[in-house]
Length: 611
Image (tube, helix red, strand yellow):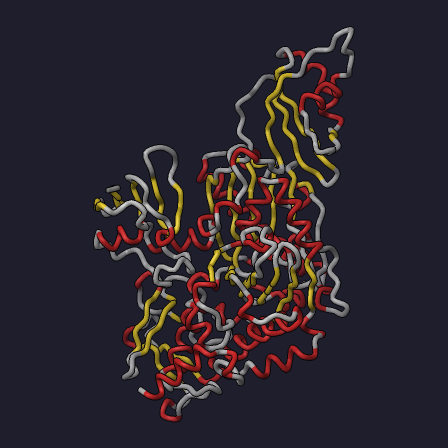
């Protein structure tokens, strides 16, 4: 039987071939590996690093990875798992959706070749011979700046035609940006960048191998000027404030790039390409484009699909002549973060089944369809699940309560990130808490607290909290959360009604984004935030926008696929849909005014009441 060696515990265990890694961990008595979804592969929180006899380590989902031979498995600590899931989410995506290592065509690449010399019979120009030797194919035009042409004759003759060319993709084709004598062994790097409203995530990538050298995440410094895109759009109405917001997000991005370069021991000038995914407002603020018209009728952005730009012009501190490309958006509130995220799902490749994609943050973006057709919309969920507007709310950081259980006697048990004293409740904890309170009759289906609680439910007493004050959920907090979940469900309901299908027709629901990181699907269904579907149909895919940016950085085929996705998707503007408000009002109950939409919740509530 295969032997699994667990690190850092230094424990070995035998397990039958074909059994999954999490089963080996259970057999070894290791409790550090958490399975919030019960091993169904839907939450992605059991990431471990696997090392086999040969090759580098790779991150895998323990409950879905069978053991075929002897392996070493390292279980990251809680903080490291948090960072992995928040940033590098490729391990949560099916491998066939990622670009194959032997078929990479990155935005910028090194080509080592030998250009044959000219002769009396073959008297083609130096440039023509170089282009022929490059064999770009696919009918793409090849160009070069004047500086390359000026030095080309000497470079081709310096080492008998042995050269290394640096090629860069542009909107018009391929540009030869540099030609060096000899087959130099230089390294060429790229950056995948996700510019989120709340967080920014960046990966440093070897463009020749596709290997991720470093991943860094940080809060978007623009938070200081507004929690959501609407506030920031209003803030940026003067040139001075627009420049201020641009400087804040560039400061975040460039600090992360510098940190990654230090991690990898390289110069930032080796980074010759970057691919950026972000919502429409974030891209406008990054480029210094006035965003005000995004929220003024007829809600038209300056640009949905920015052309490739020079890094120096963008303000991104990589090689100043490096190329920066952007994921195309679809509408004012369905941006490039969503189209990029779809590359991490079956929606982009499967033509037979129907899928739903949900990215829940301060905005909720929803896409339904498959590779044949797609319909997208967005709703203003508000920042409640980011902790804003909730008395004891906070982001998912050290000390945040992420999971809650209430027993039949009303005793509260919880899990806080990092195992520290609770400092507040993050989004996943709030969803959990609301569901538990509903099941235990602490609140009714209208979200009203039972009279004996006097408008506040105490989750933890002051003596055991970080602040020394009671950690509570108030009646006003509950009403805020109900409004937020209602906005999300109403958007799901309207998009399904618009395409004329029932929820049961959905083969898979992909949950993306930071909030979804610890979301308990059962509790989200219980409060009526997500459609009532079998739980195994839900799949968490982490930071899909960053994964999509990574894929597009390395693959011309996937960059074309992004353009196809944006062109194919039909955008529904819910703000001009009069029936959206009707759906929203109907969803202002827990789980909904129509319990027939939530049969599993109706059964669970009936069972609780009988007991």
